[in-house]
Length: 255
Image (cartoon, rainbow, N blue to C red; front, side, top):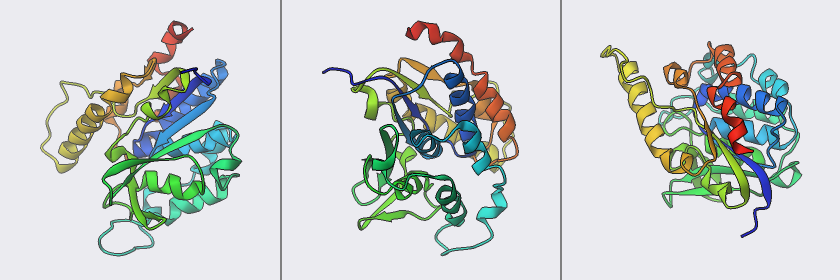
């Protein structure tokens, strides 16, 4: 099968850790690595969708500059979900130039999980914001997104770093993983937050192994394991780590 695209990038899920994606992307573009196709899950879906419609990294950052965790808590919804997803949808509606996949500058594939079929679904046509919101809808935290009668939640449930959905069409693929293996000697604190974050990191890293093994280059930094996926206070630091990602020094191996 002839490879249609020279370079594809798969952006993984990870909540607030998505600022790492922005740093990585900004540096890659500066170095002349411009993807011809992108895929994304959850936070990665947002970055991929913004890039695919021609938005600059600076515009991406500006769109979320004033977003705080409390914004999700202002308007409560039904009891079975913890927070409201409307603030995120409003940001996307204000920032996106494109309303459908067909209006994008380059091809985009968004991964979400269908609750009825228990399978991943790859969106690549039709309404754009609904697909991105579906990919970002963390189970229990956000309500599922209903698309054509089916209920969708975070794509990370089944495929957190969607390399496989673009691999066959690309000569080279980079994977940006927000759940690297955490430090092995991290001190046990016994807190619920520690246990939850540690387990989530391990599970997402393990589930992404199939896809990351398909990539020509995996961009990840162990420091990201120390950031809470819901913590927006350290967005600048996460961006900086992404911009200076260690794996970017290995780009010559992809030539």
